[in-house]
Length: 398
Image (cartoon, rainbow, N blue to C red; front, side, top):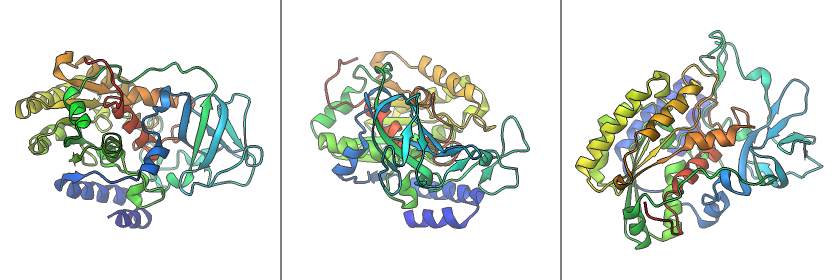
C-alpha cells in the first residue's frame, strides 16, 4: 500500500491524489482493528516522543524548510533561540551538515543562514502563491482569489525538510500539557501489562497522511496514532490494539455517524481528533454540540470509556478554508465544554502547542502538504501531546 501511495503522489495531479487518498482511507478504515505498526526501539528513542518539544530545554529534530527570497541567503527557522545547535540534518537522508562550513546561526539565535552547498531544494518566496492554473497549487488564497497556495501532498515537502536538534537559550516558559491523571483505567491496564484498546475517530491527519511512511520514503515514520501505540507498547510492555476509523475529508459530524461502528471494539480509550475540516464552517457551538453527541453516545454504549479530545494543528493562515481565528474559537469552545473531572475526559491541546511552536516559524516549516497536514515532526508533536496524558511516571489522580 505504501508503494502505491508513492506511485500516486508522483504520477497524478494533486487534486486526483487527494481524491484517491480519500477513497483509500475509506477502504482502509473499514478494516479498522489493527495491531499498531511496530517501530524499532532505536527509532522510537530517536523521535524523543517523551520529550515534549514545547517545554523541554532540548528540542529534538525540529523541522524547517529552506526559504529563499530572491537572491538572498536561504534560511531555516527555529521555534526558540538556541544556545547550541547539536545537529542539523536532512529529514529524508539523515545527512549531517556542519556549522561554519554549511550554515551559521545568525545574531538572533533563531535563524539559520545557509552558506554552503544546498542540502536540498529551497522553496522560493515567489512559489508561495502561484496563479490559479499552476501545478502544485490549490485554490485559493483568502486575500486574493486569483492566487492559489503552494500545495504538494506526498513526499514533496519531506524532500525539502531539514531537522535541527538544539539546546534552548532561554528558560522554558510553557507548561502546556497534563499535570494530573485523567485516565486511571487506561493507565492501570498499561501498568499491569493488560491489553489496552485505543479507538481513534478523526480526519486525514489521524489517518497519518503525509507522514513519510505513507509514501514509503525514509525514515518511513507513520502518523501519530501508530507513534502513540508503539511508544506505549515500548514503555509498558502491554499489548496495544489500535482501532482507527479516521477518514480523509471527514468532519466531526462524520465521526458522530460512524461512532457506533467504532465503539464495537469496546475501547478503553477513545481519541477524538477533529477541527481542520470544521473551522471553515465558523460555528464553534455546532462543533461542540457534535462533540457532545459523541460523548453521550460513547458513554451510553461503553460506560467506562475514557475520552481524549484532541484539538487540531493550525492550518495555513492564507488558505480560504482555514480561518486562523476559528482555530482558537473552536479550541476554547471544546475546552469550556469539558465535563467535571469524574468523567475521565481531557483535552490534548495541539492547537496551543502549534501556536507556541510556530511563533518564529514559517507556515510551511511543519507542513506535510502546504495547507492542512503535518509532516513527520508535526505528527511527533501530536504524539507528544497525547502521551502527556499517559505518563510512565506517577502524577496526581484527578
